[in-house]
Image 1 (cartoon, rainbow, N blue to C red):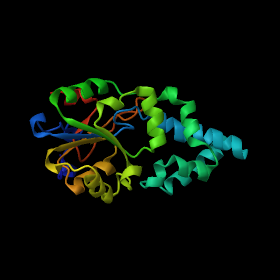
Image 2 (image 1 turned 90 degrees about the horizontal axis):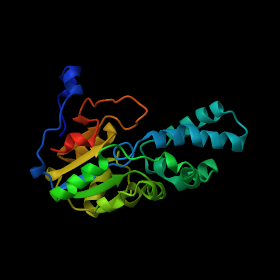
Image 3 (image 1 turned 45 degrees about the vertical axis):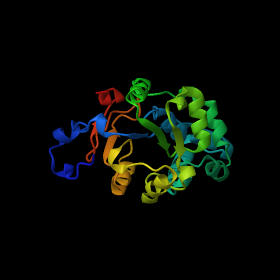
Image 4 (image 1 turned 120 degrees about the horizontal axis):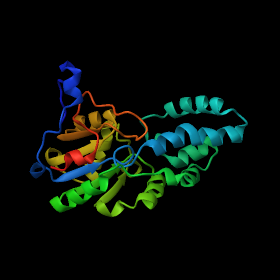
Length: 235
């Protein structure tokens, strides 16, 4: 649910805004992966520390020099399919990005209460899909580690859809790939830009995950109901 007038509300209200729906009205549940189901610390560490470390070694740079260079490189393709395309980054950076992810896969962790929530969805008879921008190779590394794939009817990567979730065309293409009723669909994601894109398409029930990383303080949405844990949606 998009709170269209949230920008006019006091911050204290926006921060504590609660989800406003009943499960009887929901048929389909879309769940993001990184930051929503899984602790985003892995991805933050990977792109901000581990890739610069390996890039610095390859090009005889300091970590700081590599980090600064890569931040600009990342930003040049932000919110596009290339941003999460491991093959693209392997070619552009001259590093085996998928292999590097495997090397630190022990850092992949699932958020607390996620498995209980997925079991709750199964008990309610909901159709649950993972909808992620992650590249299929990254998805495989993570599912090998946390083993939650069987809870979903289908795992859908943006590469399969042909657009990133931030792009309005993603939702049109997803509907062609997987017909669903926008009025009875709930979508949870930790990225507000993605939620705004989904809202623009007409998805009725939208939830923001306010604590994507276990190492960072939560940041509540200014536009959408926020949760700290999926325990809050088990009602």
